[in-house]
Length: 131
Image 1 (cartoon, rainbow, N blue to C red):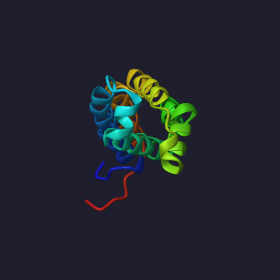
Image 2 (image 1 turned 180 degrees about the vertical axis):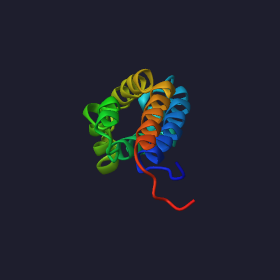
Image 3 (image 1 turned 120 degrees about the vertical axis):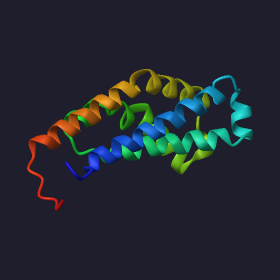
């Protein structure tokens, strides 16, 4: 196939943002709430969570959206809303636990499997794109 589907693009963006989340979590994990509030790492983490939420909520394939639902529901959705609308109210202990849960459940292998599923589904469709 000569095109990159919307879901494939979104999954690649998720992989990139998950790598950023992993780096940010390693920085923030040992910090106190006050240290996070005083630094810029909290802003970066809040933006990363917002990006993960927004990207995952745009995935059209229902099976993949379900497999990645942790990114678009529950604590992630609440953190996205709080960090976007009332950043000073973010509870960093809860945010750290949520990040840890995301990192434990949304692995690179899972994202690669989702991309492979999208590629497989593309093979099943006729491509009318000019070559």
